[in-house]
Image (tube, rainbow, N blue to C red; front, side, top):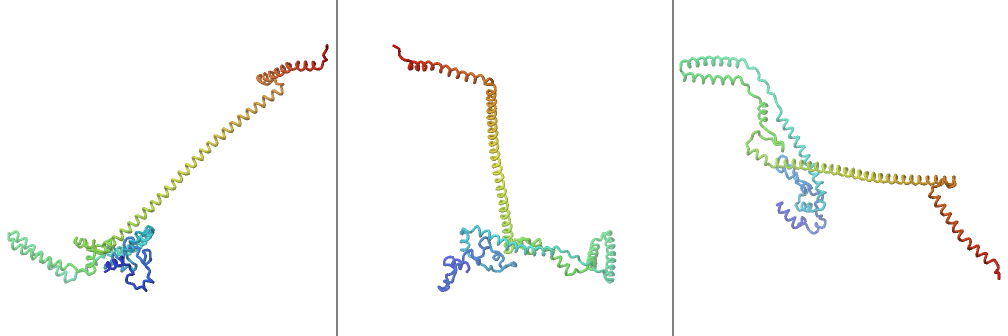
Length: 348
């Protein structure tokens, strides 16, 4: 019936049986509503695992719907809510396992408990006298058996030995004390074992069929699924934490390398700047030295009238002077003769 109802809900909608008036106030259920079971969406609902077992959790108070689960798997928000629902399921399962492990520890303590049997009470005088009589009879019979054996009467010796065995059994019955109920219970408990997966009591060294029936039972499989999911969830969480740590370390390493590169670039720029500064200083020193030498030369030429000047500068200076003097001489007569001829009167 449930499968048919779910099929009709999928085909016609969950509001197929509502009247028009009821449909006005009806709201379609979405997978992200609080009424929907998130455990059923991601993995399994623990309420479905232990139905009709000693660990039955009762029906789930929230909605289980295959169509909503399919909508959830197609939703763009699937990954975000997947992590949220899995964390909530892991928390619920851990509480189940903690309660179960507490019961398992109590059961193991009960099985491991050692109760010292009370010492037997001393034999009464009557039983002691009976045992003494039996021991005397056994001794006499053993002597007769030995004599018959030496005489070769084997059949008679064997008949006496059977009587000796009966007397020994009677003597043992008199010496043994009846065990109390508590010791018998402990002997029975020590034959029991405890399943660490589901907490069920088992008979030690039981038949293979019964052991297989327990392993394939609903309670054992259910708690196995719960424990496997917790282990898987913790492993994935630890892996994600490790990947995040490695990513942070990689980012730190990349930043360190970037800082080293920037430091090397700054160092190279500083070295080039220092070299340029050194070259500028060297140029300034050379320029200052040249100026200082020129000032020294000019100073010596002014002080000694040019005698201290370099011969090249003196020859150039004297050569220029001579050329100027020759040019002046060559031009002077013409000018003087022209003036004289213009001023003197013409004689007839």
